[in-house]
Length: 437
Image 1: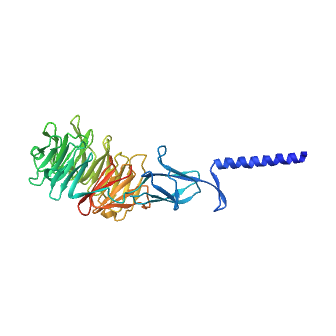
Image 2: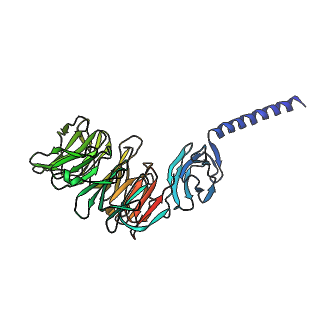
């Protein structure tokens, strides 16, 4: 072999090394040749986490292996050129799920909350119901004849009003006397609460933060009933010229909040009662109108809805109001305090209270008829209740492709611990839907 030949081979190998080395580097950086467009582009990926986990995945109509398993919660679909892709999830017993995903160079489009909706109830009762509670897997029902039934036994007659978080007590209003009765499941006894409160009771409920206490109101007074001591004490009688706001008091672990309304000025103050020191404080600042609803968003933040549709956030530490929205009909607070869903006359707004959540606004179909919202356990979905049906909303689904009807019916109830949804269907039967975990 001549020197010239050896030199030619050497330079050729150098060129091959440079080309292959550059190719490896470019490949490692995500560059691929797109034969459809005849140009090199950086690729991206789609990550999808489905519920149920073993749902079948289709990308642009073609099946993709589901990688979910013991070590992986989702599926990464890689080597995708930048463009829009159509993703579909299918599973027997569930409605199909659809979403469009935009893949960008070197980035992963994450779809971590792909929840499929059951296409039919898991169970449907044989009996007809007017109302019901479900606590700790136990069913307490109000039949068409107003019988309160638990474990097949009638424990009274009337309308269900409230339940304790530990499932030891419920309150129902007697259909025969109109009295409010506290039923103790452990003892199997009823206590006539109306005998402990002077005047006509306007609202009454078991404190969700302390199951031993019942909070009751009329137009101008608030009482606390101690179920352990079987005694009541009045904690508020509003000053002359004021009445209690329409909203029932809102208990938290440390405080009970309510509002006072002054008709002369058409303004409202927030009042806080400290359960431990048994002292009250009244906000110096006021907001216009009368209160329709109260709810604690976090231990220090109280959501306040007024009769003019204005929704405020009251900071109990700074004693200040922040206006969040207008034209609000009703609202619901996420269980983790990350956001408030404000159902308005023309839209639904998701208002963030934490950095993990983002602002969303939806122009839902027939939103003017919607009556309430219920947060799903992942805080990324909402049940939207209409007068005779309930739909399921993914708050990342801005195009509403997966805004689907769960079922026709009324009195919706969701239990996040069991991930189970209930409602009374169109023929007054209790239908139970088991959502995928």
